[in-house]
Image 1 (cartoon, rainbow, N blue to C red):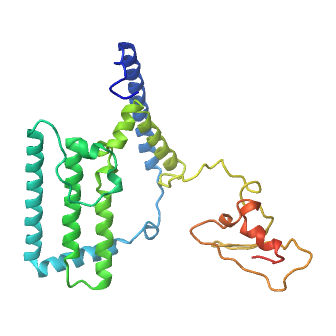
Image 2 (image 1 turned 120 degrees about the vertical axis):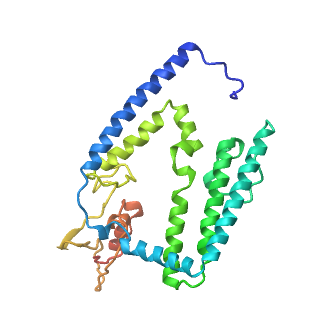
Image 3 (image 1 turned 60 degrees about the horizontal axis):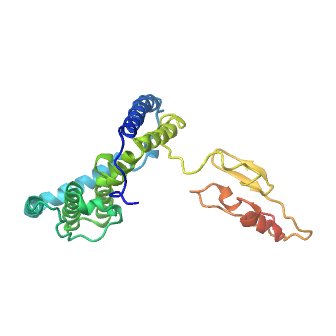
Length: 291
C-alpha cells in the first residue's frame, strides 16, 4: 500500500500520536537535564591526550593568514567568485519556485552518498541547502588549494583542518537540516530522538562526563566463554603493558618461543575470541610457547 492509498488518519489515531509525541518530548526534557548533570561530572584531563595541541591549530591558521597577506588580491578574487555563485544560486532557486512546481536546478557537483535521501532533490529547502553547502565547501577548498608558498608541513595541516571543518558543517550532521533524521522522528513520534539522546547520556554518564561512544554490547562477551578463550598466565605487568604466556598444547614443543604484538588500537583478545577463529589457540596447537 502506497502513501496515497492509505486511509486518512482518524481523530482517535491522531490523538494517540499526539499523546505519544508529548510523552517523548517530556522524556527529551528529562534526558537533557541528565545530560547537563553528566557533563558537569567531567574530570580534568591532560589536554595533550585530547587531540592536536592548540599550537597545531595556531600554526595552521597563522600559515594560512600569512599566505593571504602576501597575496590579498587572490583572497578578494575568491570572495567575489563565491559571492557571485551564491547570488546566482539564490536567484535560480527563486525562479524555480516561481514556476509553481519544484524541479531541482542542475547540480554541478559529483554524487555524495551523504545526500541519498530523495528529499535532497525534491524538497526546495533541502535541495537549496545541499547545493549551497556544496558551493561553500568548494569555495573553502579552492581557496586553500590555491595557496602557493606554504611549506609541505603547513599545507598538510591546513588541508587536514579544512577537510574536518567542511565535513563537520554538512547539513546531514544537524537534526534540523537532515531529512532522514526528521522523517524518522516523525514516523516514530519522537522516539528516535529519545533513543539517540538516551545513548548519548548513557555513554557520558558511564565515563564520568567524557564522551566515549559504545561500539558493542557490553554484556555480549564473557571472558573464557566467547572472549579470550585460550588459557594463559600473566607473567609480567607494569602500568603500560601485561605480558601473557600461553603454553603449547602438544607433546613436542618448539625450542624457540614466539612473541606476538597485537595492534595497539585493539585489545589483545581480538586475536583470541573463540577456539574456531583464535590465532592464539592455533599457535599453541602447533607446539609453540607464545608470549
